[in-house]
Structure formats: structure tokens, C-alpha cells
Image 1: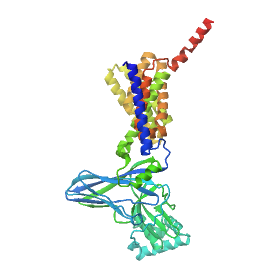
Image 2 (image 1 turned 45 degrees about the vertical axis):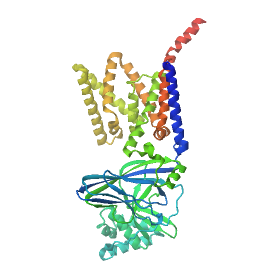
Image 3 (image 1 turned 120 degrees about the vertical axis):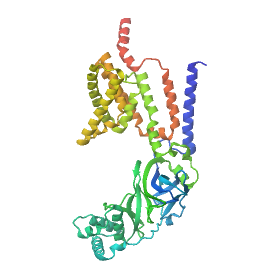
Image 4 (image 1 turned 90 degrees about the vertical axis):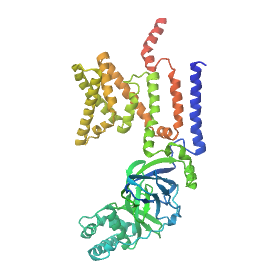
Length: 521
């Protein structure tokens, strides 16, 4: 079997395998081929850190339950050496305080625990009759000067409101008024966000309305190191209204973008045998078809189909793979532009690295920064060439110079608030330094025209790679269906044996063809 037949057979196998795996995942497991989300799903990871004292350790951590807007697909906890007790799967109407527990016979030093849950947005609101957890007004606001100020604030808010929602809105605005003496009296003992929310909750209860403290988590596309937001949940049972308010805003929070993590109860974390507990949250959103989500919700607590996908990796690894999986598409663009079109570039895969930087800086901004840094670097490299340095010291000097240029731009941009210059640190330093060195040698050997040709070609290919690598549909398919990269590999292999004319060569030789036809006539 000669090489050409082997190559064609390999291309056929790779294409068939990639398409078969992708279609199986789509039809059998319900993964959508296009990112037309019907129901978003958020994977939330809570990272708890604390210092153990060398004694037995027990940690209770409050976790969310079923809600009108959101439901639970899965939840789990992990940490090496610890036992984990999951929360009860209670009825949603009674599920106002759920906890998971980690325990260990002995631990010392810094400890890390992880809790992960998958939350989905319900296609339609579920009618839940939420029971308020036990809550009472803060006693310090019921006697003395604080009680007088609280009563006057409540009366002002009632006179300016028509219902429970407008009452809370008026309370928040009155408390935020620096000229209101009653508000300032109350705020002297409420010097943190949590204490201010407790004050607001107390005033709402004293005003005759039902509310309780909650902690909410903002659900975004992708977010790391989030903190919970203290808030109050206002309940109007007669009208079936549930509204969430935070300190400083008279408008309710959007219920479809904030998950109620904890309702009432004691502290968020109860730690025995340690101290200094802190928690941070990471959120990653993915879009799944409603049928798949509802199936997972029905099987809540059992193994799910997502265990063998990239979604089962840690959030940090997922973020890395989302970018890493786009590199083959960038390589395909380079192959097409160099082997088929005939565009010259400075370095074979430098356009891919530039495209990755452009994904972080935006295209126009990245191009301007690249041209500026390389131009200044070429000027400095021209001076260094007069010093008769050897190759390695010269390149090392160029690296230092390029870093100096980037630092200077960053400081200047921060000083004068120029976002363009502050983005320069997103470029790969070594690649910029090597580009400066390569273009300098090219300038000396082939002249400025060749430098301009290769630099322009590199930017053109990088711009096309940026468009492909940043396309939302392609990014989605590369991450959800990584087996499609086998098809990309097959296409690259198919282009690998192309030995015909490039498009640029056809344009260059077109006049000769026309002259030949004229001579023949």
C-alpha cells in the first residue's frame, strides 16, 4: 500500500470516527449541535479554606435547595482524607436550610474542601410555597434611641409607599439619605453590608411585612472568586410575590440571574476544630437542551452522562481547554492561507499566537499594539546590531528591551487611563522578541519590502484565525464535541499533499498566460 492510499484511508477513518462520535453524542446523549440554548446550566464550585488545629475537624456548609426559578441537577463534595455527608433531599417547601458536612478525625494546617453543584434554570417557574425560616426583629432596634429612629423611618416609608415592594424601596432610599438623622443613627451600629441587610430586614419585619435574610450568588457566563451577596427576600403571599433586595438599590434583583444560596439559618459555615474559614465561588455556564436537562433533573442523585465529557474537569482546566481546543482551527487557517493562498508570514505558527492574544485584546487594539511594539523593537534592534553582539546575547537583549517597552506602555497607560496600552501585557513576550530579531535579520538580507510583506501577511492570517477561533458556534462545538478535531485533522492531512499552484502564484503568472495566448494568435 503506497503512501497516497494510506493517506486517503487515514483521512476517511479520521473523518468517519469524528463524525460518528459527534453524532452519537448528539442523538444518544442529547447534546445540541448548535449553541441554541433553551435552558442554561451553571456549574458552581465552592472552595472552602481554613486552618485546622490538629484536633478532630467538623465543618457544616450551607447549600442551596430547590427554588421556583432554579433546580438542582447534581451536587457533590470532595477533599482528600475527609468524610462527606450530603444534604437531605427535602421537600422544596420545607427546604429553607440545607447543609453538607465534612469530617475528619485529625487535621492540622491549611485545609481545602470543595463543594460542587449543577444548577439549571427551569423552563417555567415552579409554584413553590416557600416557608420562611424562623426570624425575629433585632432586639437592639426595639428599645432606646434606635427604636425611636426605626419607628420614624418606618412611618416615613409607609406614608410614601403603596405596598410591600414600594415600602422596601422607600426604606432603602431613606437609609441611604446622608441628611436623614434617623438613618444616620441606625447606620452607626450597622457598619458592614451584612449588618445593614440585617437592619433592613428588621425594619421590614417591624413594618408588618414578611421577609428573611438570604445569601445570593450572581450567576454569570464564567466567573471565578465570587462572594455571596447578603440580601433580604420579601414575601407577599397574598399576591404570590417573592422579591429580593440588596443594600443600596431600591430595585429588586433579577431572579433569573441570582441564585439563593442560603435562606435564614445560622452562619454560612460552622467550623469545629479550626479557624479562619473562607469560601470563594467559581461559576461556569453551559447550555444544554431542555430534554437532556429535565432527564438529568429526574435522575438527580444518580450518575449522569456528563461524567465522561470535558465538563467533568475542574473549572481551571475547562477554561484552559476552551482556548486550547481552538488552536487546531487556527492551524487549519494557517495551512489554507500558506499552502493554498500563498500568503507569506513571519514564522509558521506565529499568526496563531497573535490570534490568541487578539482574543484577549480585541482585533484592532491587538494589531495596533503589535505594530507599535515591533516598530519600537526594530529601532532598538538596529542600534544593538552596531555593537557586534553574538546571536544569543543579542536575542536576550532584545527580550529585555521588549519587556521594558511593554512595562513602559503599561505604566503610561495606567497613568493616563489608556486601555490600549494596558493591554500590551497580553502578548507573548518571547514571541515578540523573536519576531523583532527575525524581522531585523530579514530587513538586512531582503530589505524593508519583504519585512512589510511578511508582517502584513502575519497580521492578515492572524486576523482570519482570530475570526475563526473566536466564533461562538465553533468554540462551542470544539469544546462540547472535541472529537470533531479528528475531522479538522483529516482536512489538514488532505491539504498536506497539495502541490499545485497557489492562488497568489496564479495571479502573479496571469499576465504571462495572457501574453502566451496573444503570441499564439
